[in-house]
Image (cartoon, rainbow, N blue to C red; front, side, top):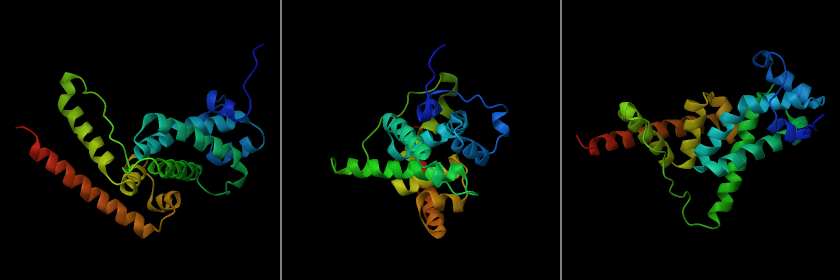
Length: 203
């Protein structure tokens, strides 16, 4: 009989085996994980790892660092699970952990570079029959990537992760008014960037 990985490694590496995964509430999974059920935490990982990675990638603009942040966030969550407040949203909590992990890495990065963010090449073009749509998607990704970090993160949480203002405020540790201001300015900057890009495109 093969040896099974245990603990947080099992949660991160193994697929959960809980029946009716989509029907189990996050709070019940947290309780089960605290009771020693590694599969329960594995279900939480499976449920949120893509969203956490997406947030990390939008913030870090580096795929390898985003993967590292995602793993780090879930390890920290696992170790701190007993501090999770009953009645809170696990998604907001894990996003907050991931965002602060990103901030720590960005702070370290700034010590070695005068530029806040390095230049990154975007992905290749899509299929020929979807060239226009692919170009528009690429321009949008580039426009989001060009936003200041505080705006880029708010856009990611609000539009891509569909978080509410109060959840974003909790994740980022900001007043709700500041979140709304960042979101408004991010949208304005995106619209301006995309409009300028369209004007510069060859006819």
